[in-house]
Amino acid sequence: MREPWALADMPNPFSSAAGTCGFALASKGSRSSRCDVAKCCLRVAVVGGGLAGLSVADRLCKLGVEELVLFDPNPIGEGNASAVAAGLLHKFTPRGKKAFMADEAFQRSQELISESAPNSIIYHGALFRAAVTEKQEKDYIKASQLTPDSELILLRGDEVQCSVPQSPARMGLLIRNAFVIDTKTYMKELWNKCVITGAASHRLERIKRPANLFDSGFDSVVIAAGYQSDDLVPQHMNMQRKQGRNVIFRKRCSGSVFNIPMVSGKYLVPQRDNDLLAGATVEAVDPEVKKRSIAETLEALGTRIFELYPDLEEHYEPASVTSGVRGIPIRPPGRAPLPYLSNPSPHLWLVAGLASRGILHHALLADLLTNALVSNDPNLLPKELQSGVD
Ligand SMILES: Cc1cc2nc3c(=O)[nH]c(=O)nc-3n(C[C@H](O)[C@H](O)[C@H](O)COP(=O)(O)OP(=O)(O)OC[C@H]3O[C@@H](n4cnc5c(N)ncnc54)[C@H](O)[C@@H]3O)c2cc1C
Image (tube, rainbow, N blue to C red; front, side):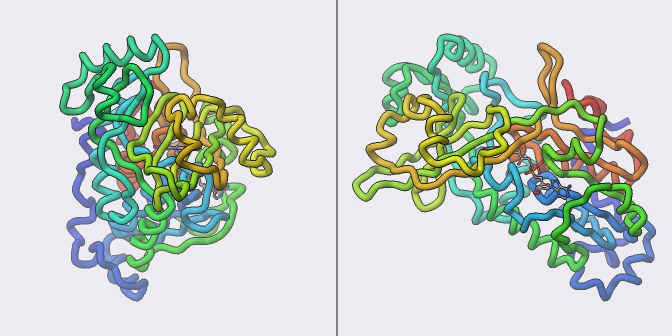
């Protein structure tokens, strides 16, 4: 039997009907001919238009479903966590280990982003994980011994000054292959790809009871509502909510450009037009967060961003703030949290808990979920993702 992971590369299950179910479906006028093949008649509702929902929608449209309706009360690209993500795509955890299925996930995300929205790639190059504590120093030495040089380089002393002159750190890890993505642009382009198949439409609607969607004639429903997935599929997941906040800095006229993403608990990430995003995603949820000023947000972020880049205020001035909430599976001690990919009840599918690695994992998760959905076979979902822990 093939491992579920191998199914990510599964060919189009509708290939026998390539003539009627191909990718270039111009309009719903071809509906009856496409229905020659039973699976092509699938009507699917996707609840949530963040990275998870949109990548599922994209793959279902590619596979040639009859109709796909995306329900989200927000315009595409303006929803919750995905709309405020810093845009970092790389393979490594804060301790310098490879994240779950990192190689496969990175490759799939890179492919999907490059094919759907190459103009959303702001940066491709190295990322610096600065070691500012003794524990980080130990972790990074260990990590550099485990991972080949081609992916991860341990920098010490002068090597840091040489490669990352903006950082005062004495040590750090250089992750050689990282991207920064403009997630809003990416999501909009991903959705445009769905729309031009003629099968996809967006309803600006918040779903309260997913079960009602079956009464409206949908064959399958996918819940991809980020941290709010918990409300739609109660008692299925063990997930906590963590808030993230960003301050967007504008370059001062006389300032020089900060040009390498830097992470150490907090992050500093180059954005479009020489903007710089400083933020973190590990706070308890603050219901009043939208009312917080730049000064309050900077105070909440603390001193770490200035420790990472002491010249920040000399070269940049704070301009605006953003915030969002992510859902993180709660893990038993010593276990890594993984996203949820499951089938809570017949024809109801769930992808949630992407935590701080949505950009890394979204494309692979979409492949796995859609393969199970079109085959109507929950056994195709990896067991460890159904419970959300490694
Ligand atoms: C500040 C911040 C920075 C981050 N930076 C990074 C980063 O650099 N790299 C990275 O990989 N990850 C990052 N993340 C994490 C990443 O953003 C998430 O993992 C990812 O966006 C989750 O995507 P999602 O589609 O599951 O959820 P979301 O993006 O939260 O999308 C859920 C969507 O569902 C909709 N919705 C909710 N309830 C309903 C309902 N009842 N009916 C209809 N629609 C509904 C919402 O409007 C929303 O559009 C960051 C997160 C935050 C908060």
